[in-house]
Structure formats: structure tokens, C-alpha cells
Length: 168
Image (cartoon, rainbow, N blue to C red; front, side, top):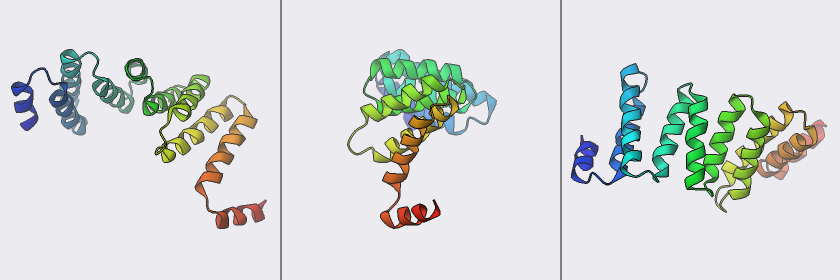
């Protein structure tokens, strides 16, 4: 109710509409809520067509609700609006991976790695991991090994590495 009141108070602010959509998205198991989720995100976009968080929220909702092609379309818009948004590249890559579009997924994971911020190490490790999976699926084994090695090297302490070396 507070978000609806905020939306009425300042109809030119897309944030209340986005947050209304997020509340409805939490209840999206109910089929009727899907209409409300998409309407709220759509209203945020209608208020500000350049409001990337609304496209990103809609993309996440589509990705989580078996609408992968629509999710890709929404992530494309996020990337158009925010070309340095590494998370959008990562998320789009994850959706493309599920669609078995492995070359495109690897490209998106590479873009996520390239555009990362200095404090985004965990997200980058995950990008390397999923890019390795994509490379494996397209039989680019050297690249897959390099990414898997990167993940292991960055994630494990030297003590754990010693144990792994003994296994090989």
C-alpha cells in the first residue's frame, strides 16, 4: 500500500511501480499475480522508458517463469541502456546457456568478466565458471580448462591446492 501511495503521490517516479512489481513477483506462484507483476513493471517503463532497473526486473521475472526468449529481449534492452552493466551480461548469458545457445552465452560471460568492477570478484568467478561450462558444451576444451583453472586458483587456499595436487 505504501508503494501504491508513493506511485500516486509522484506519478513520474518509476521506482514505486518497480517496487510494486517486486512485491507481486514474490507472490508470483499465483497465476493472477503474473498480470500484476508485468503491469507494474510496464508502468515503471511507461513512466520512464530509459529506466533500466524495470527492464532488468522484468527480465529476471521472465527468466524465472519459463519465458527465456522474453528474458533475453529484456536483457538486451538493459544492456542497450547500461552497456557497462556486467550483471546484465552475466544474467543474459545464463539464460542463453539454458537455451543451449552456448556460443552466445560464452560471449556474454566474457563481456561480464571484461566489464566487472573491482569489487565484483565473486560474480566474476561465477562468470568464469559458467563460461567454462559453455566452452565445454561447444568442445572448446582448452578455454574451458583455462576458466576452470581460474576459478580453482582464485577460490581455493594454497593448503587446499596442495591437497588437490596430491590427488593428481
